[in-house]
Length: 289
Ligand code: UTP
Image 1 (cartoon, rainbow, N blue to C red):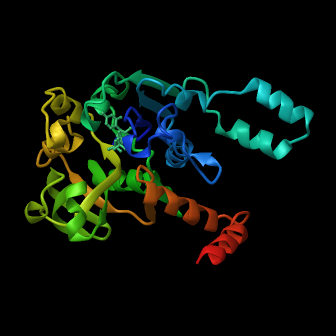
Image 2: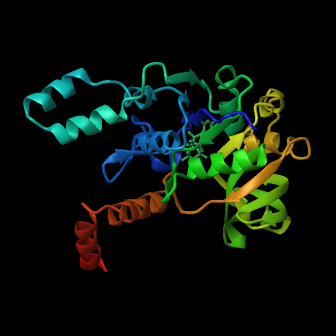
């Protein structure tokens, strides 16, 4: 029986240059979709999968991401005085239990692999999930829950994968697929941002992972990969053969909220998925169609 999955690392130390000037003062992960910041969607998705311990890998100016999960006493008092029971309940639900969240610092954004290495003392020798909050998931069953089930079934590393048009592969980590069983694809190789002609498939890794702690040993070597960054993909690739490694074709939709067009699409899709917002969004779409 594999160890239970209770820990998640959320790397949020990136600079968010594609979203300047919005991200000059504010963390990209605080951008709201409808009325909720990206970081909160990620935390709720992980909690729905039984994750109890969170580590945010932050950088300068990112403390507000941790504060978002604090108790806001003044706000609670005002809401109580104004009889706003629904808002108060929603606010209380989002606070994490005491001690559930820690943050660590990645002083210089040297790459996603380096960000994960910064969480090594939190990970210790446990399996852990990684959620990149700018990949926003719209799924009936929490994407992290789907990943956790795949981990329980395989007892090893799992990355969420999706198919992209061949000409887009060089933006992503790409898997070399082996045998397929249902939604699970055996991973035989992994390469970060390959040129189109060298890509082993058009199955790409998105921002959801369940990894075994042994990946930290490989990350400790600080080897630079694509774009001169310490890439997570390169260290994950070293686990292949030594441990089970699978790609999961998750059920649901992903929105790349680190990209302006992806972010705008997420606003539309999430509004349409909510009973309270769908009529207003439909009216807006009609007006501009
Ligand atoms: P991105 O590739 O989206 O980079 O990182 P970014 O800096 O956030 O955004 P752009 O490209 O400049 O607009 C993917 C994820 O990895 C984290 C980011 O915070 C994001 O969640 N990351 C990336 C780190 O935490 N540290 C890094 O050194 C690099």
